[in-house]
Length: 307
Image 1 (cartoon, rainbow, N blue to C red):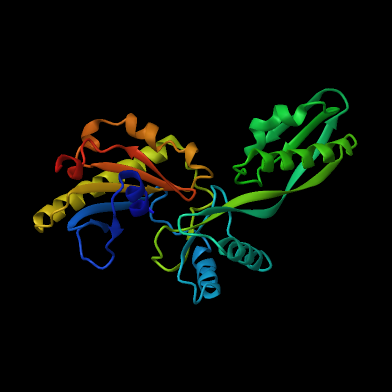
Image 2 (cartoon, rainbow, N blue to C red):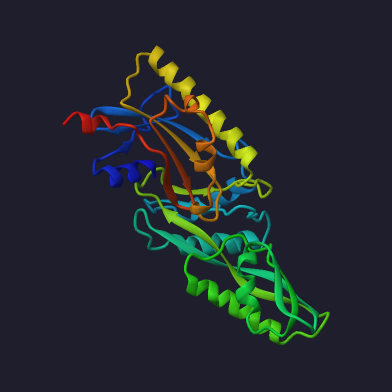
């Protein structure tokens, strides 16, 4: 994904070199030049629960397909470890992969149940916990009575407003049928994401996500992990220099389990650090939600100065 993003951004051809030994976690090639990449996950080295089992099944389903795909688990998302949940997610992801072109993304509609309760005949509002909290005013428009919506089971909001309006309408329709002290299930959809990687390597499916307990917007955790990866980048750069390995650029690529990449706080965390912490790194980028975002812009580009 980083290679594809760099190619599109700088109108040059960058390709991963997975077959070369290096002091870095990975290498990207631009003609004869090499770019050293330090790879890190915002949640550390802990494996995602049940991801390996799902990956194995998805790869079996993709046998003969030359593409490289990813399933992006949103923050708090739990991967099932038993039936029928495992097969349901497996089938949904497989359908999502179908027909994707390189670098394309697609949302999956996964059934999810929220809880809606009418707590009073007085008032005209809906209190909300979970990702829909920001929509409480829309839910409350013209409502008769006071309600509480527990939307914590919803992990990722749809990107299109029209899709979100469908969710809100279903909840409002259910509210109109409730009596006081009555609780009812609101059957809606969660919107997870799948994508096809820009290059068909590594072939098969990758399940990308953290433990459901990990909070990607916990500032203290993000700053600590970002510092750790920057230190690793310094160590790898020194090891490469000692081994006589020449690179024209160094990159730190951080993976984060975000519902939407616009929710990231890595950029803010970097701004709060001393420049000496990242002075030796040319580019810092974030990968999340099927997208790549630049966090630190290179001060100069070697291919520009070579003109």
